[in-house]
Length: 122
Image (cartoon, rainbow, N blue to C red; front, top):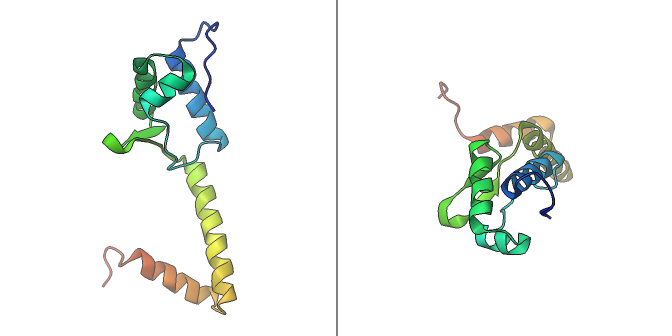
């Protein structure tokens, strides 16, 4: 949850930018998570929509979020968060494949097949 400290010397747009950045780093905001629309967040925080829009523009320029037009703004993953999510997905996949009675070499073959043909191979 984001908040604005009206008594702070830090401008509101910077408070929003810093909080989103910190929440992404801590994992509170995860890769692919949709942020509230500009007007909605501005209303919640009691600031002008342009304040939130500026924070979102700066977050996008810094590679923290991605705006997808009318679909909204989404948190981008960090290398660490992507690795953490990939590890969790791999562990879940391995557990399911073990339950099906498949070997590690079978699992690797299925994952390679799922990724499709590699460049330079036939």
